[in-house]
Image 1 (cartoon, helix red, strand yellow):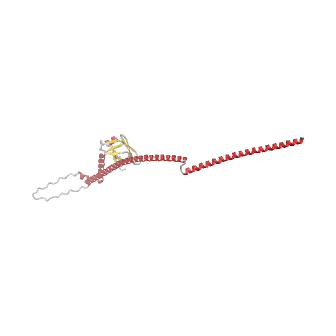
Image 2 (image 1 turned 60 degrees about the vertical axis):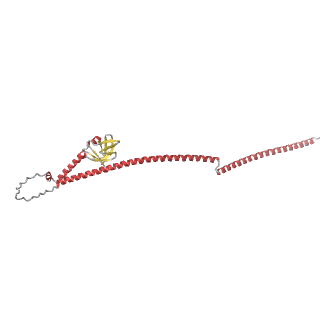
Image 3 (image 1 turned 180 degrees about the vertical axis):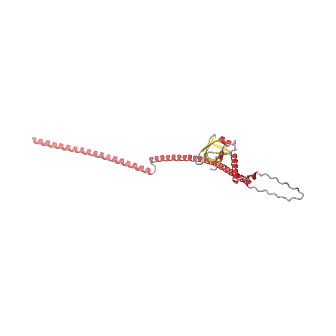
Length: 291
């Protein structure tokens, strides 16, 4: 065999070998592509399945919510209902407590108002009686003054009737001159002088009557003054009669153990302290006045 024939045979064998290798590589590549495609398809199927499962789960939860049987919904509803019941219980308990407290306050206020009403009624009654007694006394004093004035100024002459003397009767003796009575002597004074004397007598009489209260019943108990069978308390309007006619009105501002303090009504608003002993001995006298 020639060299040329050898070369031809070698070239043919090489071509056949290359063709054989190429076919095997193609088959291997096809199998790899198939596996890769199958892997990608399986991953897509898994994702699709997960999506479908999650979608089904969500749809199922929506249906449970529509039917009010979703576990989370049921749990939260129970928690809200429990909180609501506790709130209602606390509100009812607070309402009962406040109602009972207000009823007790109402009873106390009603009782206090009744006591205050009774005290004010008694005080008003005593004030009215005191004012009426004082007006009655003033009327009696004025009537007495009028009677004294009438007795002193309006003296009527006494007329005597003379009888005719009989023949056998003795001759009457001449009458002796009678002394003038005090009432007749008073006629020598001027009317204004008589009225001034009557006013002075009346004033002296009233002063003696007002300050002739030695050993008067006056005492202080529980912050109140008991004087002349009447009770006096702070803030009460009074008339204070002092020696030499220095009378004044005012309000009781304080009552201590041994004295009372009266604030004058007027421009000065001065405060005057009256000792309990002075009231007992009659150096000062108190009289109730209407506010």
